[in-house]
Amino acid sequence: MFFLWAIPGISIAQGNNSNQANAILSLSVGDTIQSDTTKIIEDAPLDIGQDRGLFIVTPDQKMQLRILGSVRYLAVYDNVNFSNKNSFNTFFIPTPATEDKIPNYYNGLSQTRLGFEITRSTEKGNVFIRLETDFAGANGFRIRHAYGQINRVLLGQTWSLFSHVSALPSTVDFAGPTGSIVTKTPQIRYSAPKFIGETNFAFALEYLPPDLNIPDSLHIEAFQLIPNITVRADRSFSWGSAQVSGILPVLSGIYKDQLELIPGWGISASCVVNVWAKGKWYIQGVGGKAISKYFTDLAGNGFDIQFPPDGGNTSPFTYGFYATYEHRWLPMLYSNFTYGLCSLKQESYTPDIGYYKGQAFRVNTFWDITDGAKAGGELIWGNRENKNGEIGNAIRFNLLFYYDF
Image (cartoon, rainbow, N blue to C red; front, side, top):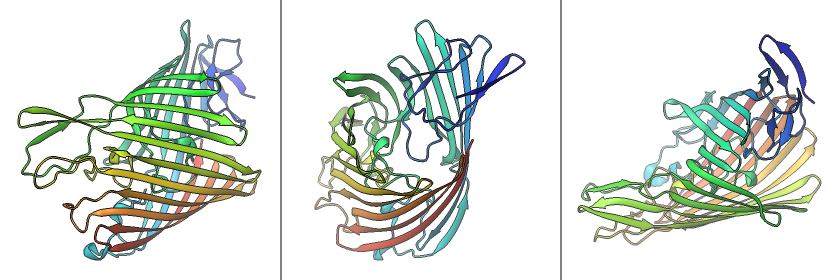
């Protein structure tokens, strides 16, 4: 139910705790807000619930504004010196060649979020606009989601179709499990619910520039000429859900006054399995070439293409995997246990201290303190292995307290 009351020029509706995920608000029936399944909202773990927020409705009942937010306080303890406190990245675990074991403690509020959603009823269907931000960007402020949708067409920035956020376990760590794909991209998307039987289908043209580390001796200008083509199919079953995605990225650049196009590929698959009433499994696997920028552990380090000293280029095979078991101890208390792996193929010419693989084991526990207020704790052990076999280990402990309004 929604509770409505009037103030000059508008009416306001405040949601209760009913489950309304993946529903759009239709404003065309009297003074009652109806539900419709056309709105594209992919809820990642710890996202602000669809039943939270302040709802403001125009007198003609044709437009609604939802204001939502979350205040999030994070405490972190590391036994090594990580530059990023929001996410545990195995690439930055120090090895004997780069020893930097300085324990440190951190507090921050950068995961705090603020968002706005507008739904407008038109003759062509409902128009939905979403803007959500946080403060975890390089300079503080960051756009998480910014897109508009009408019927089956979406334009703007949201989760890549190559990401499977519905198969992510809840983690205090911002980036999710090691080996997972958690990426947002600007895109043009078309969705076809129940395209074949009960299987949903989506197609998108996405923008994510090549992630390259170009030697100074090579005068290459890299850019994105052709959008990344992504497709996804997903379906729900009595035992859970499954989805599979594919991507065709094309890396572009100018070398010796000639245009170079280097195609890549990628496949991701995931499932959620309800093994019994209080337990479930989350499993995901990803592999491909020229897709390192999609992995949190590898993004920004220039691994999409490597340049041998004798000329030419190669796109290393990259893969990731994680498996999580989640158990609900009490209605307001649950834990999960996750193992994740991320690996980058090494060539004969790559440095001996080059990143070969990283793995991590995580334990998370979350407690619903009261309506809207939650707390989570996470213990992470991870290691990095270099091409030459050197190994570095790291431990992180996270605490997160937050209130969604």
